[in-house]
Image (tube, rainbow, N blue to C red; front, side, top):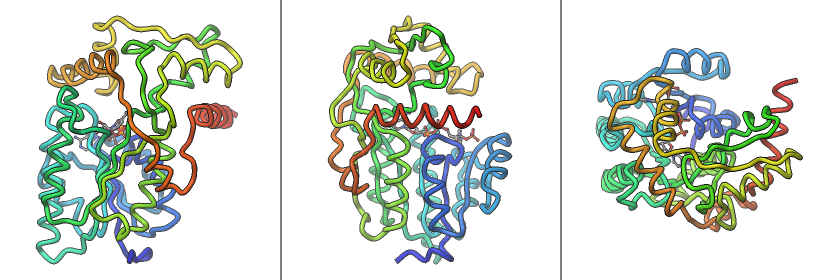
Length: 310
Ligand SMILES: NC(=O)c1ccc[n+]([C@@H]2O[C@H](COP(=O)([O-])OP(=O)(O)OC[C@H]3O[C@@H](n4cnc5c(N)ncnc54)[C@H](OP(=O)(O)O)[C@@H]3O)[C@@H](O)[C@H]2O)c1
């Protein structure tokens, strides 16, 4: 049984999309929370936003940083940074630190790893690298739960589209390819349930999909058009342009290393042909409600952006 007063919960990649959606739930249940980020800028903003938490900076590629942030932790939420050229090593290094903490009579009881849908897809390097992390975690002897979110609705830059008079979403792949989408709203709530109910979810792997039927970006933009009351077009960017601009943006505006560009370009090629398809049954069961539809998400997002600008 979790001890909500005394258990220390570690949230990794706390400044990222998924953890940002998880933290508000966890703050309501657990009293002791450690938030990890990498940069000083994110550390500063997390300290301002969540003054009653402990904020730590760490590079998950560093074994000593992993040992430092897992010290005294009872349960942790593990997200790995996107398109990191050594993502598998980051995951296994972190799991080694978890094993060492537990072996030295530490309090660790639960590792929740937010992986990705279909980590078995070998052609997608950013999925394939997570398959080995999952394997390492499953064989680690630690109590774990694996969550497998699909492509996130938040990848559509809705605030930017709202500002444009004649909005066009420039897609990094063929906009008619179908995807199953999830929103971080559902990922955060599902993650919180798993962390709060702990024992019920030990050794489980859950696919996280919000949309009932697959949608293309063209169809997603049609939904957003209705919500915004103006037509949003979906248009494909050239491949070189997609690789050069999008991966640079993910790398914080800096020129990305070659290996990072390769991960992104393979993903764009794969998405161009195949998309990503999953099923929303498990997420509905986990949340005990209907997962968020694309239209609900778009409406919520527009309201949120509207009230933030007032
Ligand atoms: N986008 C999708 O559709 C999707 C779908 C399924 C799964 N995923 C997976 O989700 C993961 C990313 O999660 P997210 O989207 O929530 O994150 P995100 O919004 O992309 O944020 C990245 C996070 O990684 C941290 N970070 C960067 N380098 C780091 C390092 N060396 N050590 C420790 N932390 C580091 C950043 O900290 P600072 O802010 O301090 O730099 C930030 O918190 C990836 O593994 C991705 O494959 C994404």
